[in-house]
Every structure is written in structure tokens, then in C-alpha cells.
Image (cartoon, rainbow, N blue to C red; front, side):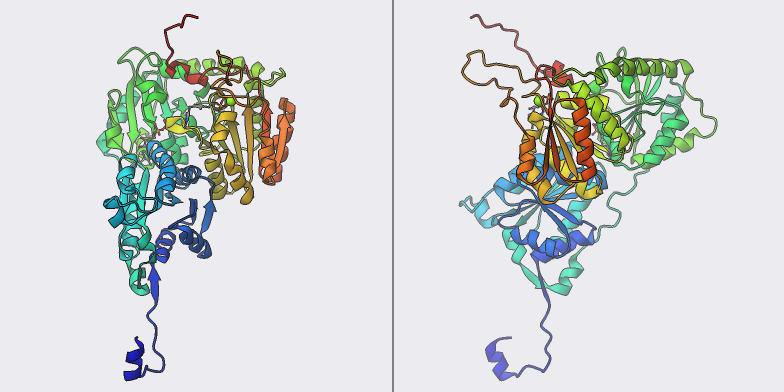
Length: 581
Ligand code: ADP
Ligand code: TPW
Ligand code: MG
């Protein structure tokens, strides 16, 4: 009411001011209405107040030192909870820093939403040089599952709802939500604002498989003499743990877990063929893929990791119809959500199900036992400096004793050997570099694992891998998270022994020798350990994990022990040309 109006028409005694809301509040209300309680991000223009206000409204706002790690945290929060993890960044550079994580989430089928503030549309589109100018929506689009921009406060509810549905439904993935600076301060009537919000009902609707598809799959499975189940991270994500265990045990079919599916059934399960992976893939005649793609990690379903061409029949359960026949023919596609599909297969097996021929089970068991026996002495090695195997043998025992701890793992040798050596006992306890083999997920995953589950976290990190997100130890200390980082310090990438042939510089793959990563943790008030033997490693990690405090163990590993590219040296191109001196 204007001053003039007041003079002419005296105000009634109690005039209710219309209650107002704005873009900031509506974004927060929309997230909270949808059960989203945590934001991972880095503050700055135009979203500084959004973070502050979200915290004031009771949300958990975890501020990182770099957006990529906030993005990785959001992505793995999505994997662990089936709710989209939220990453909040500033415009252009912050947005770009978050984009790697968004693309990685999409590649790995993790639901996440990258919310970025952006500059003024009018200026961006005329390329007039706004502060942090960038056409973010256009850049995000090809790198994620869906991308949306909200221009009016009244559309925030719908925008957030669309982002949630896009992230969670069907094959999960990364979604970009562009919120221009002007939107946050836009004011509207509070009641209308509340009404504009949308609580997403059934964000990931069950997708039941067709009965014919189930019947076809069972026919193929019945015909098998050497069947195998491959469990992928989609199976871990689906949280259908009981049904999957029942399917394996009722069918009596051996299974191989992909990296992040380890622990869906304990790795010590009698039907686990994890330690006999090569034999299991090569000799199987029917393979049931559950939430695992036939990409490079499974040698595309052909070639020398598999039997003769055409000798392996594939049945595939996946929510994404277009995944079928992506690399080889799928003779029995089962399109639907894993919980429904696995249950339907189980129901179809009924009482009369014939378990696979015992000679196949024996073959797998014999191979598994032989491989485990071959590995055992290496795990006990007392060689100095420590081998990867000896250090991992120590950690293997620790994880066995602490099965509810979450293991985060990255590196090359540190990754590949840990995957094989450290048994997992519970679902969704192993988080790693996933489909891309991306370095830098370590600290972001660790933060979110601790925040989302409240469980202790053990990070097993190559020294190079750790460096990609190492500054986030400050974040871990700031929030007092129960994270124990073990840096496998072999002075470099794969090995610490390379030299520059010209003698001028350090080799391209080595770091400052004998670095003390433990001191980085001490710098921020955490606890550092420096260990050189498996016994010291065991003592330090146990003490660290008992304390529940942020700790970093610098574990000295033989710089000569690793192999180039870990287990995937065959993918590394080599020059055939020898330079003459
Ligand atoms: P891994 O790397 O462990 O082999 P991938 O990431 O290659 O696993 O495969 C995961 C697959 O799981 C994807 O094809 C994805 O579409 C699928 N998926 C994810 N969630 C579900 C679900 N709830 N139901 C069915 N399939 C799913
Ligand atoms: C984002 C390439 C793969 S593995 C690795 C790099 C740099 C580090 C290996 O050394 P580390 O492990 O961690 O010390 P170890 O035990 O063998 O010594 N950039 C990105 N992702 C990848 N995968 C790379 C580079 C790479
Ligand atoms: Mg290394």
C-alpha cells in the first residue's frame, strides 16, 4: 500500500500482509518436499545464500573444496539411496567442474542432479560478457540424461519434479538443472508458491517384465549345462538383495560379481565364482546378466575371454531396452526392473527346478580353490618394502572383521589387486572407479558414504588416485567424518621407478619419492600414520577405525612392485618404433 493510499483510505486495524516466498525458498522447499535432505556443493555467486538458507532450513549442506568432488559425492549418494544426490555449483567454472561428475554419474547409471546457478539469459545469449557467462544448458545436454532450465519461480516445483523423475526412472542417470541468478530473488505469493510444488509420486515406477520374456529366459536357462550369473552394479543399485540371493541359491547357478556388485552375496559364498572368473566366463554356455552391461569390463561378450563365437548364449535383465544386443545377440532379453524380473524368474522356477550339472559346479569350485590357494602365500609376505599383496592381505582381514564398513577404492594396481583380494560381505559396500575407471572419486565418495550411511569408511587409494581429490581431507576433517584413508604410496603411477631418459626432469609417472601423505591429514587436525609393514598397517587401520576420526595411513609400498596400467595393460597402446640413439 502506498503512502498516498494510506492518507486517503486509513488502513484497517489489522491488515494481513500477504506472505511472500522467493526462488531461494521454493528450491529448498521443493527438495525437502521430495525427501532430499542433503546438498553437496561449493558456494559462490549466485547460490551462496541458497546453501546458507538450506542449512538454516535444516538441510545438510556439505561444502567441498572443488565441485568435482561434491559432484562425485552426490552421484554416489544417489547410488546408495536411490534418491538423486544433489550437487550445487556456481556458474561457468563451478558448473564445468561439476560436469565431469555429472557425466560420470550418467555413464554409471547413478541418479544425481547437478543444480548450477547461471548468468543472465539476455546477456549470455547475446554473448555480451556477463560475469561467468556460459550457455550451460547447451553444454550440459549431451553429457547427461536430461537438462532443464527454470525461468519463473512458479515453475520451480515442476522443474525439480522433472529433474527427479528424469534422474530416477528407467535407467538412472545424471540430470542438469539450470537456475539463473534472477530466479532466486523472484518473489511470489507464498501460498501460491506452496501450491506450485510437486511431490513426485513413485519416482521409479516398477517395470514388470512380460511373462513371455520370463518364460523364454527360463527355457534358455534350463537348457544350460554350464550356466553362469553375472551380477552388475545395477543389481546392487536395485536393492533387491533378498530376491537376488534367493535366485542364486534356488537356481544353484554360480555367479560372478562385477566390482561394485561384490558383497551382494558374500564373496565367500559357495556359489561365488569370483575367484574363478576367467574359467567361469570362458567355459559357461548360458550367461544371465543382471544389471551388468556387456561393455569393455566384460570384453564386450566376445573374444578370448569368452568361449568360441556363438558358444555362449546371453540372457539379460535390464531396465533399458536399448541395452539389448548392444555388443552381441541377447537370446532372451528381459526388460524390466531387477526386483520384478528376478522375482518373476524365481516364481517361474518353482519347485521342480533342476540345479546345474554337478561337474560344472565342481569345475568352478576346483578352479576357485586353486586360485585362492595360489594367492594365499603372497598375502602373507613379509617382504620389505611391502608388496601390494601383503598390504592388501592385511586390509582383507580388517574388512572381514568390519563387514559393515564401506570400502572406497581407486588407483591402478591398488584398485585391481584390492578388487581381487578384499572380500566383501554386504551389499553396496564397495564403491569404486566404475565404468570409466575414473580417478578422483575417492574423497567425494568417502564423504557421501559417511554422510548417507553413518557407517565407517575405509578408502584404499593409489598415491596418484588420492592426489586427484586429496584436498578434500580438509572437508573430511571439517565435518569430522569417520573416514580412514590408506594411501598405497609406491612413489607414482603404476610404479615409482621410471626415469626421464634425457635426465632433465622427473619421469612422467613418478612423484616426489617418500612423500608423507599422512602429514596432509595432520595439517587439518586429523590423525596421520606412517607404516612400512603389514603389522603396522593392521595396527594403524584398526586404531583409526576404532577412533571414528578422520585418519590417513601412508603405507609405503615397493615402488617396483606394480605393473603398467594394473590389470588392463592390454588396453595401453605401445609404440612399435624403437628410436635409434
Ligand atoms: P557393471 O559395471 O557392474 O557391469 P553396468 O553399470 O555396466 O554394471 O550396468 C548396470 C546396468 O544396470 C545398466 O545397464 C542399467 O540400465 C541397469 N539398471 C540399473 N538399475 C536397474 C534396475 N533397477 N533394474 C534393471 N536394470 C537396472
Ligand atoms: C580422470 C589415468 C589410470 S590409473 C591412474 C591414472 C592416472 C593412477 C595410477 O596410479 P596410482 O595406482 O593411483 O598410484 P598404483 O597403485 O598403480 O600406483 N585421469 C583420470 N582417470 C584416469 N583413469 C586416468 C587419468 C589413470
Ligand atoms: Mg601409485
